[in-house]
Length: 232
Length: 222
Image (cartoon, rainbow over all chains, first blue to last red; front, side):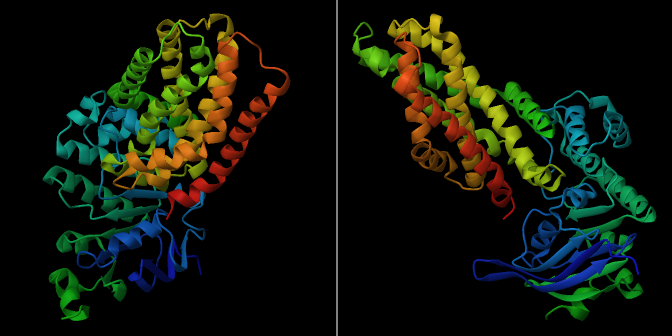
């Protein structure tokens, strides 16, 4: 049996005495897409930060491609789209993408390709601070997809996106899933998430109260997960 | 050589905004000017504390540059993206240290002739050894300062915390750099018993470079 792309094994995380994550375990294989849902403060972002190697677990183990998330080989295969756009305002769009291309060992030509893909080629040499919000978000998407990551970690990716950026991101995620990439995204946009997800996890007060395959009921009624598995 | 790409990125960002460069340079020049009113520049005593005065200016101006080192990554959560990239914590740290080192050396090279004019001190014959001491002292300051910049980056009082942590710990390097600079500005060569200060400075740089590179990954991933 092949090793899962992502394996979370009895993970605990505390902020002081507060248990941000309590005994969380799940795994995902290639081509699977997990919608991680839960209310604000439930522990979704903490979980994603541990997966991205930004934070360590107090107990338990996380393995990405069989390695620790802090191994460079694992991080090379992650695409991260967090709350912030992760690009530099004072640099131009092409400078931003070229820097990240260098850090991931990708050719500068790929940076140009992604500017065209995100319809930003005409502003390649303009500083990001002059961009509209939608343009900045598309640049962030280009930055996250630049190195063709095998695992996409997305923290509320649809929040505050304009319609053009939502369409772009949905298209790219569907394409990535079809190409066998693994996706994990936290979100409050249940309808968009259910359409894309193969699996759904509900997290409440740091505990994983549900993890399973996305069912037809969940697709028909996105609040089904909260109503069925969530606390009253 | 990923650290050079990080350093180039930081330098390019700084040259576009000139946030810390302008603040640090104007602060250094103002302190030099104010001290020149406080002391009689023609007095012989000036030569005795010239090294100390110069390094105090560098240390204060340096804090302004070092504070921005990791704080530069906070807008748009760029630090998270860098930590999640395949770049190791050590490479990221080294890149940031090199960028701060270049910026601080620039300030120092500009300040030296201004200092010479204000305090009537001849420094040109000793320019090369002085630059060597500046480089050694500045590396010690930037390596420790960048480490504390990473440590305090998420604190609301980081502008206060960084100097509070940095200055006591860099005292040995600061004392050595002050002493060696004073010797050079007096027109003497570093020799005999004074070599101990040079050894102290080099030892400080090596120890804290190794220690910082070993610790930075733990500091960045909490």
